[in-house]
Length: 149
Image 1: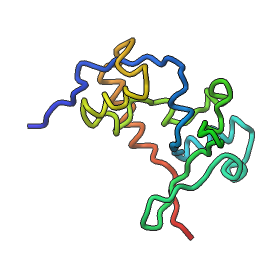
Image 2 (image 1 turned 90 degrees about the vertical axis):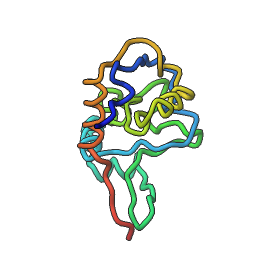
Image 3 (image 1 turned 180 degrees about the vertical axis):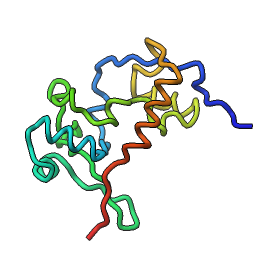
C-alpha cells in the first residue's frame, strides 16, 4: 500500500516578502521553455537576446547543461530591484515556491525549507490539490537543457 504524503492535511505558507528566496545566497532559477517565452515577451526581447543578457548555462555533469537566470555579484536574482521587476512573468520555479518536489520529499525536507524561509509553516493553509498542482506543473515544465559543445 502506498503511504500518503505528509501534507495530506495541507501546508501553511505565507510569503513575508523578505526576499530571501531571491537574494543573498547563490542559487539557480531554472527556466522552462514557457518561462523563457514569457520573460522574453514581457521584456520585448528575442529569445536569444534574452538568453544572452539574462541567462547562464549550469553544468549538471555528463555533458548536460541547464538554463538558469543570472545573479548579480551579491547573489541577488538579476530581476530583483526592491522586489521582483518581472513579477507578472516570473518563472514557474518562483511562482510555485515553496511547493517544490525537493521540499515535499518529507516533513523534514519541509522543515528544512522553513529554516531559510520565514513564511513556511505560517499563514494560510494550501490544500493538497494546490500542492499537487504545483508538483504537476514542475514535472510538465522541465527546465531547458542542452549538451555541452
